[in-house]
Length: 416
Image 1 (cartoon, rainbow, N blue to C red):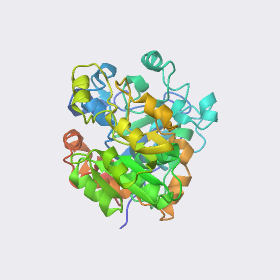
Image 2: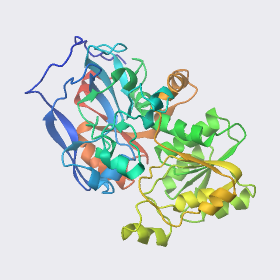
Image 3: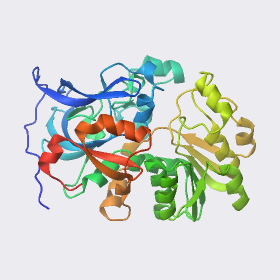
Image 4: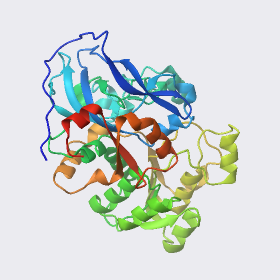
């Protein structure tokens, strides 16, 4: 199939577009988003780039804002989204690695590349890109900025939009081959690198027995990467959704239906030694016990430790755990004694996307891993409000994730 390449636009510094508008996905309150008309972004710093979006999607973590858990950190009209690909339209004079017309993947983490943490390639811990005093008050430190992910991560406009301003473009953009289908390219923006981060944090090794709580796009990606790339001998896939459990089983994983069995008891009945690595990819939105459902409903805790407790119990002495499903606030009844006495190493955190390239891109280009399975439906950008509702209610056709094509993406007619 033939398709068009974006036309080049000249390199530039700040050039205001006071009358130019674009369409963008705006948060208007709990479970309310709309496609609104907003000013088109402009270059405001020498390291900025403006990217014209062709494809974007909804991350599972966007549902925290959609569902109301992050209301106190949102403002009406905020532009959502941190997974997108497109073409560079213009760049500031200090951008050296990209030029107008380049096809790019926008990474979600906005890092400076210069601070103590960036120098250690711990980009999601960047000291300089997040001005949120609220985060500093919560955690004692600020973490990196993230596109479209509330004001606690900097209040950056997201890229579920026709255009996006990308700060520190040389670090936050990734060159995307013209012949890479949109599904693969967009999966590399966040899902694949977040999943790889989980595999890295858990230190999955050849021959390991691994358990992954969560069979959404990221959980399934962790399972596949653990088995196909890292060489795990067995991978247990824990979820309540029958369609997602069936997908995991079709990939060769061992399904564990948390609606029918207590996952830790079930796994230990088969693996009395326990898991070598346990990975949480469900997050705080999914309490299992009545106790934690009541605690969350009454505001006595912000996060549930149900899945974390199960993983600690199912993991062998001296094993490793990773938290990839988002946790933001506080929890109760956390089994700290069991964690300590079993000598389990627990790590977590937001993805350090830039650290994992070009390795992940080459893995996909060479056909050693195909991340495109995470997209089970194609829709138009204008239908994003309906897609939020579908994803929140687990009603996306095919059971996983929709890829949204912008008017510009449709105009280019690229392979999806």
